[in-house]
Length: 255
Ligand SMILES: Nc1ncnc2c1ncn2[C@@H]1O[C@H](COP(=O)(O)OP(=O)(O)OP(=O)(O)O)[C@@H](O)[C@H]1O
Image (tube, rainbow, N blue to C red; front, side, top):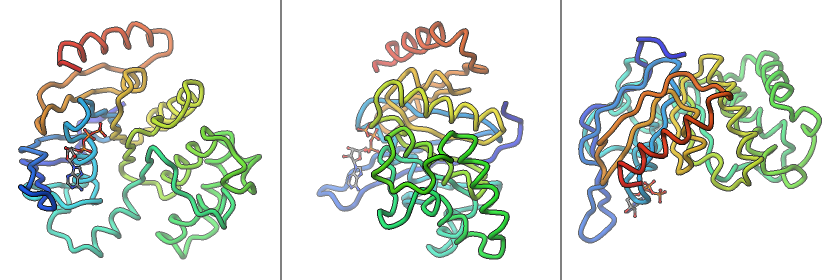
């Protein structure tokens, strides 16, 4: 359930890639507010700029102009070291491919960033990570290597790692993109759970079934936000209807 407070905001955000000839402007002035506790999904056709938007508002990349504010703090004026610190302590990330170190077991991979963020709170971090792994059903594989678990387990481990530092916002870029449909449901159930705890989530997805879980969906076309859809709270009972409604809204937008 989202509140009236705003956790993340961008204003007049633009992004031009100068590595191409000619340079290509991908974002053309995005204004967006993400409320505290909100689950927001960004959709749009391939190449519309969804990942670029996600990277630009999460400090993974620098926008060309405009402002990004996290909990009221201007990110765009920080230097790279300060941005890295904000990412480590205030943000969690889940990607399509789970990036883990092959020489560490699952638990140590999950612990790594949170221990880096809070080196003086080792006991607290370990306790939190243990609780997360139990909650998301991977405590029995915590000593396994990363090639000894399923894709769904690995992605749930990514969620644990992203939440271990108690982030203000969780960013997910196609978190189910590499999963089959039952693993995808597993992961979306986990994210729905995380959201019901009050975590703010911003997710990019192509999948209407995943997007149907969100409180709100925004539609990006050629680097502009052209439509927004409030969906209210997701329930399993109404899931099919909600997916159908979302699908027709997406079709109207040319998806
Ligand atoms: N680092 C980069 N340098 C130059 N151009 C880029 C770079 N990253 C993305 N682009 C271009 O920017 C445009 C938007 O890409 P982006 O990945 O943000 O779109 P998307 O909506 O997430 O696409 P998809 O759904 O296919 O992942 C594309 O034309 C892409 O080729």
